[in-house]
Amino acid sequence: WELTGPITTSFGYPPYALTVRQAGIAEELLCEYRLSKGVVSISRWNSLRPVLRLLKENKHVGVLNDQHGEYNNLLLEFFGHKVSVPAGPANFAILGKTAMVPVFIVRQKDNTHVIHYESPIYPDPDKNKKENVASMTAQYLAVLEKYIRAYPEQWFWVYNRFDKLPAEFAS
Image (cartoon, rainbow, N blue to C red; front, side, top):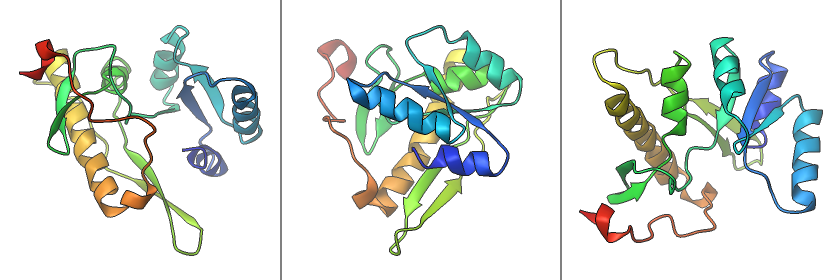
């Protein structure tokens, strides 16, 4: 994640990153590092209008989309489990009239890295917003599963991604 921004910047596409504030000195160090590499952080706890403005200006905005979506009720299959997933990236693509582009960075055996840009995921004009959010997010999850299966040793979660859903969502 932290390497994709500087590499994208080196190709002339300075990115913005939607981020979550870290505890203590980690926040200061991450912000300083990102800025030194040309990456501008946008706190996800502030107004998200700047994200939509940037997308409409055809700017690159990075969003980690493998997190738990506890603040919404979008439930999709992921590795055969029903999980709560964030709807934000698909909502941004729909409202910003753009695509979601899954991007993955893979460490090689020689400690170099390769960035993989997958095919863009566009909203379907024949679907309503709710259907598009679910469809686009499911397409992203399929690509994410592909990378985790191919490089399981490179995936890291510090929480139980497959925790039990509350009873009202389990069916």
